[in-house]
Image (cartoon, rainbow, N blue to C red; front, side, top):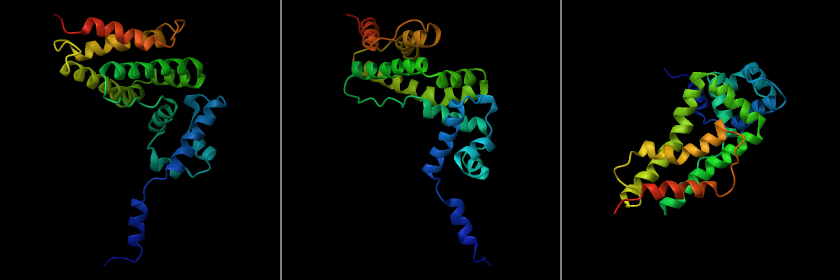
Length: 203
């Protein structure tokens, strides 16, 4: 026999997550970090207090701190580039320009640098970030390169993954390894034109 309250319980469990609560919790974590709280010192309880919600509300959304930190990092990150698909060169420039802006943001934001450092020092967290955010961006780039090969803009015998690294390598090198090097406007176009020149079909 079904009890009268069972339907209400099922409805409550099936209720969609509140986007406002999600934003409040992520915003609370960011505020704590901006005030100088170390990433390692963040707790789910402290974030719940700062957000003005119950601890259970946080745990219903994220099973642990690492999962929450992934969404905090995504909130700090540049949104993914949506290529228009009209021109291979223009799409490549848009993708690389997004990387350039991300590199500049990292240099300007102590909080973003702190988060990146924390992720790099925690292999499981970095792997999750790499397998979601970074992989999606890489697949967008590879799709454009495959389209370029199909359209005859790029040689079909070139390895897509290696070619992708030729495009992104200079920007990543300046952003992550040589932070004293400039990331000027027009750099994305210079890289794309240089690599495309060498990747065009021969003859």
